[in-house]
Image (cartoon, rainbow, N blue to C red; front, side, top):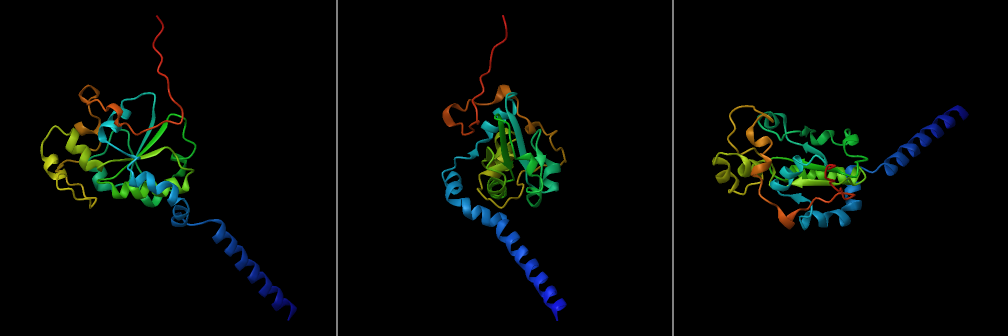
Length: 212
């Protein structure tokens, strides 16, 4: 009888421990719900959706620790991806938290998908589970990027449809990856952004001139 009670007590302790673990470790969705009132306005007011021109400028800025995170599928990634990008599927974002935690003061993360919805979900997941890094979303996604930077004309008509179903609507026939000419636009062909920049660093970086 006593032995049986000991076994029941152990089972209750096990259940209690499991309950504490459950409540002590909220799910990603629960974390977002807790922070939504703070973070949702950034999305609604489009404070974190940066234009392709701003991302292209960052890609040429040697003083920025830029981390482009592509959350698309492998097929679209193989067809085309931005120079220097890292592909991390959404289901592996939390497991790769080291890519987002403890960014340097000049660190910037930009999430990329074919449109915006998948990148937005990635942004929400990481912001709620990785100490809110300095993270942004590519506005219009890869479809808009190609419409603006590919030397051809087909992408403009496709992008004008305004669909956001996360399909790669640009007609790329060969799997060029980052070898595609639009993967890293020529810095000399970029249009000035002016006051429309949205990326802010944790600490302002002063570019010093050479000795002379």
